[in-house]
Length: 384
Image 1 (cartoon, helix red, strand yellow):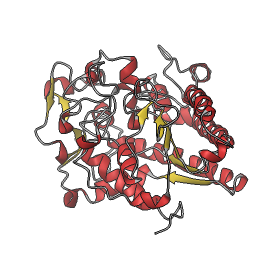
Image 2 (cartoon, helix red, strand yellow):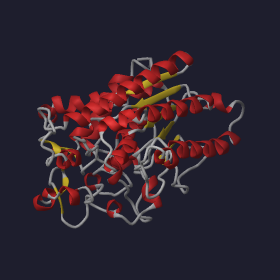
Image 3 (tube, helix red, strand yellow):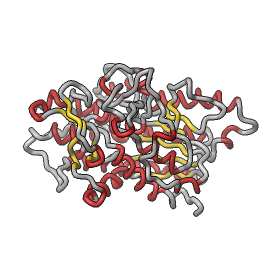
């Protein structure tokens, strides 16, 4: 029976024109991340991706929906455009590299082409494939959110201005920057929300097309001078509150010991295996480029395995959630966002892995980032 892959792309966007789209450095005092990545010597961070790393781009475009206000940003007392109660993985990676938090591309008032220490192009709900490519897979979008190719276009536009201010070879100037890419989940979410099941997705080649789009994007940024690239896989979607809730009526659904939907997680692993095979091919083609896999799947698994010692009491429920009666009606629940009428916010987000029905709390993001940082340090061959 079809397992619905549920929807990162629903829970996005924060921030109004009166809110800061990038956090002041002194508001990040919750971080315990030691600047281990400083030894890698990254001069800047350039990020392409989805909601898990969107620090405000989608909020700038659409400041009027639920996530444009509290309770988002609850832990840091400020709604910032991030789909969480606080900071995201990208924020902790930047801090570990001893860099400023990465400026959203859409925040033109804060984006200084000649002096920026990086730019974040990530956009909530963004697919790897274009609207037209998805349509060929019988996946329709009401409106086209900035796909991977669109974000690459933004990157091109940015570098045109950046390179005008660089003396000498521009590609050499960005060679010490860290480039990050995270895509895939939204493409599958759109497919499953339109009643395509896992076997159909595998058969129609959507996963291989997503992986190919990521590979082509990597080739593009390598041609622009990237020599250090971090490519994230997808995490354990079956543990997301929306996935668990939507499968509650599916009698054939099976769960692991943490209460996560196994078929969803197996599908995530299928994507990750194909992605890693693709990255291996690119490493062989570009031996001078460090192409590192960001293993979100096992990072999340580590949180589940060590949840008690980390202080997490809720693994598959959302801190910001709908009440029980509404939750029983799964069809309504999938349209209900944190902050809408009927939602309830827990008093201690730090005890929850998930903030809303699809995104992690600041506490979980910090733990994920710490695991990722420990894993990638030797792979980037950073000097101690």
